[in-house]
Image 1 (cartoon, rainbow, N blue to C red):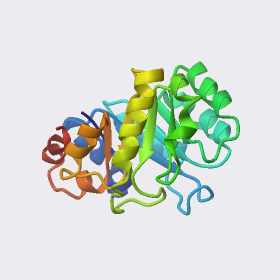
Image 2: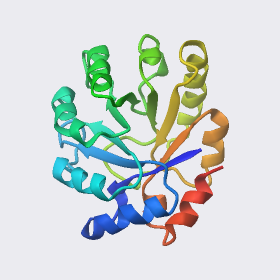
Image 3: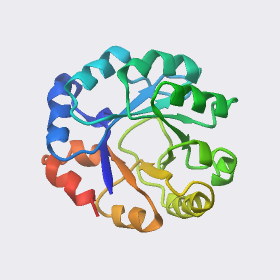
Image 4: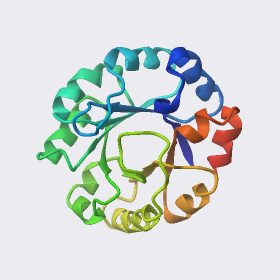
Length: 213
């Protein structure tokens, strides 16, 4: 299991120290939530902040766009060379075009499903992406309660991936903790995003290791 601490829950007054601490604590990726105040009712960080994160991080960035006008944001952040850029299929009309745009930049493309968005909508694009991020809370704010139905969605997505893209990575984001991590792994998840659970723990390394089931 790979762990991607979400810096949305970090102390932004000492963000560089927070990023270094989770990198040293065993994080595999640094999850960056970019929100525009339109697709979700919150605004987070612009490219200058993410660039500062990239400079101090010793781990690859995992950028999650919760935005409208996705191609515009891809162009704005592509110079940071993240490992992944993920975007919500609920927002984008031309999904294949954006997937190819991301891949053409040498970045691994990923798509995101909100909790109520069915897995069946991925049938004709799952073979074109490297990862699918399943939201286990409604996006926009950290610290929300885990929605248990995502466990069945992971199982369904894993079955689809076995048929069409066996190398697909499944990432889960929202309300992740050491209690539900074993269930998520058993269902077929590969990467867990954890924000509040890690950054409010007091011991980042211990918290990260407790998720690595």
